Each structure stands twice: as C-alpha cells, then as structure tokens.
Length: 284
Ligand SMILES: [Zn+2]
Image 1 (tube, rainbow, N blue to C red):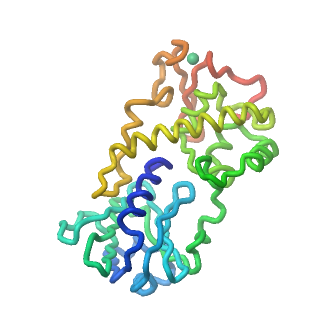
Image 2 (cartoon, protein in one colour; image 1 turned 45 degrees about the vertical axis):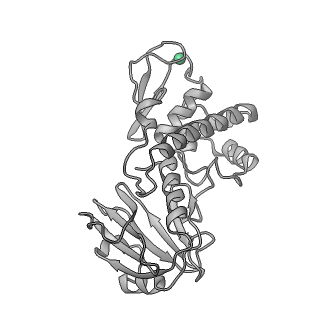
C-alpha cells in the first residue's frame, strides 16, 4: 500500500505532466478499473472527453485531477495501482486498465493495476473535494491542518495513540510504518491513552510525524524519474532510514535496547522498551 510520501511524489508528477492538458479520449480496457464509477465505462469516458485538467490534488493517500467541468477524476491506487505518464508509442503495460490521451498528442496518462483493487471514477462537481473522500481528515503536512481541533478530538477519543494516528477521520496519511517511526522519535508507546497526551507532548509527536514524512518524501523525490510516475516501488527511505519498524531484536538506534514487536490490529508495532515504556494505563 503506498503511503503519503509516495502518493505525494505521484501528485507532483501529475501536476508537472498532466495539468493544463485537455483530454482527447479515454479507453477503458478493464471494466473493473472503473467499477466505482457506477454509471459505467461509457459515462466515465464521456465526462472526460474534451475536459481540461487544471491541477493535481491530494487528500491523505487519495489523488484527484480537478477538471474544467467542475468534476474530478478521482484515483484509488489500492494495493498495486500505478499512474504512469508514458510517450504515446510506449508498449502497453501487461496490466494496463485505463488510457487517457490528450489533445496535444503528447504523453498519455495510464492507469496500470495488476490486482485491480484500485480504480478511477469521475465525481460530478468534485473538483474542490470529491464526495467519496470528504470524510478523510487533512494530513499533518497540509498547510490547513488544524492542530487545535486535532488536539481536542484526540482527547475526546479515548483510544490508544497509534490507533488514533491510523484513523483517517482524525488525521490522514499516517500509515503503520510511519506511525511506528514517529512514535519512536517522540518516545511514546503506541498504547498510550490519547486522553493523557498534553499539548506539548502532542506537538512533539506531530513534529516527529512531519519529520519522518518529510524525510521519506525527500528520499522518494530523489528516486522519482520525471518521465515515469510510479507509486508501486517503495521509496529508498524504507531500506535506509527506518529507526524501529521491522527491526525486532535489533538494537535501538538511541539506547541499544533490543527492539520489541507486538501484534497490533493484524499487523505489528515496533517499540524500544526503554525509550517507549509501556504506560501504566493503556488502550491496547
Ligand atoms: Zn531505545
């Protein structure tokens, strides 16, 4: 599953290559890729024909292209979806699902998805913010992220801090890996009750979240080939820079204590038992 930094890299690629271009025609090569567009593939293509893309926007891990009709072309990348910007003569990808050609005859936008969990849809009137993602909260690198509102909602939630970080209606864009990394940097245990988190502690945590996202974005940005918009590959950040995630029994990079792995929501949580002691009261 791509995380926020990878999706932001794709958004920048789309802003560079697709914004300002007018869609000539759309080919849907697999109906499953537009299943979220309930009116069907014909309606999907019809709403795109002749429309100019005027930007590339993101809310959490969701991307959309606002169109001059006031509609939005919304992308769900799912587990394996890729948005590629390819020269018209480039051979079709094995799992090419949707192709958009532009009136200038230049690069095509291709949606490629091996497992077809992702897809594209046109959301009528959704250029500003598509309806299917209105419940998704802003992410902490969004300039309009409201820290005071987040602090208040967090205190009222009565849950563990990591569950809160993964709740897309509270804060978006923080996946399992980045949550563990940020909690380690902020020296907070994942089961710490949200109602015990004071504003200074929250500020420390948000600083840590922004730090790991920025570092990952910088790593993803450097590996980004401008001719090839790709979210499938993990950014170089994953191998090089992880402080705690996936490092069970390896020494903490701060104090040398072996890293602990706990089962968490069918996944894992990694902590340093010394830097991130278990809270006396905990929301597991
Ligand atoms: Zn430690």
